[in-house]
View 1: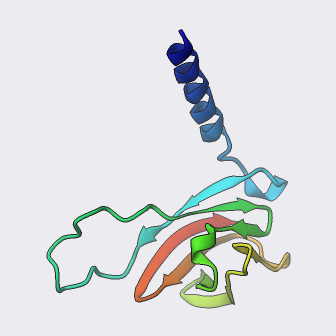
View 2 (view 1 turned 30 degrees about the vertical axis):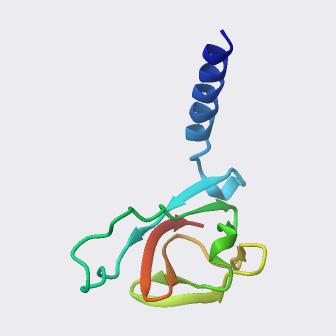
Length: 121
């Protein structure tokens, strides 16, 4: 019985988590997934373990990253031009200028790897 109750709770939790994807301009948390742009290393034909998926959470003009990404560079790109660039602070946060509006490509530079996601401000 306890196992069924826990399973039901997890299902509800994941259902609510899926509902969080909404319009970020009104302050609702939005999950921003990243895809890898840079090629894999040529030394090994495949990775032995899959890499952990990268996500950021957007609330208005604030982006929240995993604390493992502290100090890495983030760029906002519009029409192939860098509009804004900064580093992820010690709390895993990035505050974007409120003057920016529209859809932007968000690039995350982690070592030699480049990851990309889309955000709307």
